[in-house]
Length: 177
Image (cartoon, rainbow, N blue to C red; front, side, top):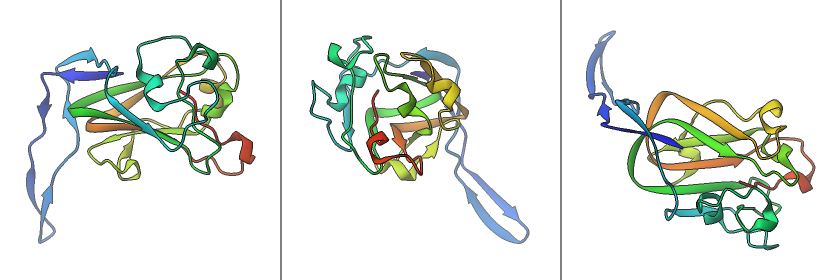
C-alpha cells in the first residue's frame, strides 16, 4: 500500500453558492512524496475467521508474502453474507493507491467485486471506495497484485475490503487476502 509523506491538505472552504452559505470540507490531499506504508503490526479485524489453518485478519499484513493459505499468511473470513476486512492505520495518512494481493493456491475469483474503502470512519461503510470494484480480469490471476488508485488521494485512518457481490452462491462468500 502506498501513502504520502509531506501531506499537504486542502483547506476548508466557505462558499456562497446561489444565495446559500456552504461549508466545504474535502477529504482529499495532495501527495508530495509517495512512499510505501508498512502495515505489519497494525491492528486488523474481519467479519469472521474461517478457522481452518490460521486465518486471522492480521495475517493479511504480517509481511509474509506466501499466498498459499496453508503457508499461514492469508486472512480468510468464514462463509459470511457480507464478508469484510479492515486495518486501523493508527494515524491519518494520505493514500494515493492501495494494492491487494490475491490468494494463489485457489479461489482467486472470490475477489471479484471486492471494494476497497479508505477514510476516517471505523464503520467501513461510511468510507468512500478507492478505485473501482475488483474486476474478473484482475481477480483471474492467482497470487496477483491488484492496484487500486485513489483518485483523488484520500486522507484515511482506516482501510477496508468488503465483498458484496449479489447472486453468488452462499459458498462463494469468503474473503481471503
